[in-house]
Amino acid sequence: MTIANELADTIISGSAYADGDRVDAAFREIRANTPLDVAQPENFDPFWVVSRHADIKEVERQPDLFHNGDRSTFLSPRDNEEKVKALTGGDPNLIRSLVSIDGKEHKDLRGIVFPHVTPRAVRPMEDRIREIARGFVDHMLGFDGECDFAMDVAFLYPLRVIMTVLGVPEEDEAFMLRLTQELFSNADPELNRRRAELTPEEMLKSLWETNLELERYFAKVTEKFRANPTKHINSLIANAKIDGEYLNHRQMMGYYIIAATAGHDTTSNTTAGAMWALAERPEMLKQMQDDPALINAFVEESIRWVVPVKHFMRSATQDCEIAGQKIRKDDWLMLAYQSGNRDEAVWDDPFEFRIDRGQNPQIAFGYGVHVCLGQHLARMEMRILWEELFKRLKSVELNGEPKRTISNFVCGPKHVPIRFTAN
Ligand code: HEM
Image 1 (cartoon, rainbow, N blue to C red):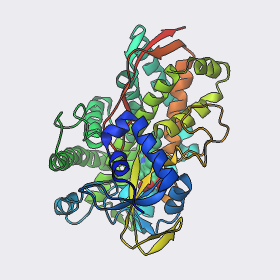
Image 2 (image 1 turned 90 degrees about the vertical axis):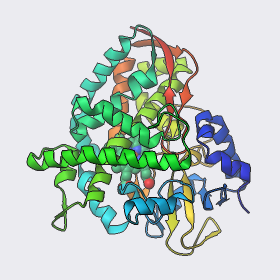
Image 3 (image 1 turned 30 degrees about the horizontal axis):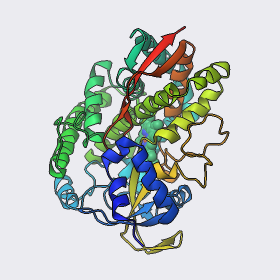
Image 4 (image 1 turned 180 degrees about the vertical axis):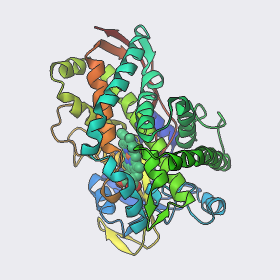
């Protein structure tokens, strides 16, 4: 069987993700009838849609069998593959970051930053992050009862946190935010590089221009941190050596870029979506104020709810079988995190936002050797923001209709208008 065309078209449509319910309904049908099957939307190579929580884990558990970097790591049109290879000198991914590298090279590169982002390593950052969070709570309360929480707080706070950890000065934050949005929100005319609807050709061109602009910026970062090494993550990247050699140009650029972009947009989307959920459920604020331990559950549920990374792709290195389906060597697979986080086999009521779940095995950070490197930092910074905000917030409600970014890749709410009162 293959996945019905209208469902295949829906799960790759940026507008369907912006709608939210539309993509959830499509995945619900896919999980029920064709949970691991082939989608063949026009202009794309066919790909398997891995829609269930257990099957996503099964694929991610076997990184030698399912590679990240042999083909594009995110869904891109058939025509793009050769064009990307021409731009990069043979690599199917424009940016050579951890998510598009396999095997020993991935392990060595991940090992450079990994020890600095474990739960134990991020704990000492708590005081500095709390200071940043308090600053943004003051900033929000300064709006006098109304703001767009996404634009005014959620896009800015995780940006300040990650840039502090990376060692990027505050005056460069606006530049990093713009380029991140150009990378991840390329399909959205409000946020992309041209501020217009783009053809696939123009999208690729924009992505490449953004990449080159980031590379020019980070070339100076390497110079700076080689001359004066610090404990910042960008300094670790600039000075790291594998087998006695500095990282090569594409490894180094890919590393800076993934840390500086994935390091805030994902968390911003989750923070904005959490506020949206809270504004629609006034009783939750009081519950968390009475029992701040519930804030951890709120954070975890908001990650499951928003699923800011909608998918990553893998390709099979050999013929194999998953969930009774015969996968052939070189077949392309979509790990549909949006779907895995709504799987009825894992949650009784996946379409409810609940902070009393107890266990919440959300899979929005992925799984296995590529599992999100920033997960502990992301959780901690969101918890701290809510702890600081809830001490001072009396009520919050929506003040207009929230809007999500048009994208099928890394995205979430871009406008969350709220009305609030403070203590
Ligand atoms: C709510 C926030 C976040 C979500 C939902 C998220 C989600 C993800 C996902 C789904 C992956 C791929 C995992 C896989 O293939 O199994 C990933 C990888 C990654 N994330 Fe995050 N992320 C978040 C925050 C962050 C932050 C704050 C940072 C930076 C410190 C970060 C840096 C990375 C890096 C470097 C990778 C690549 C890891 C690898 O391939 O080895 N992420 N993230």
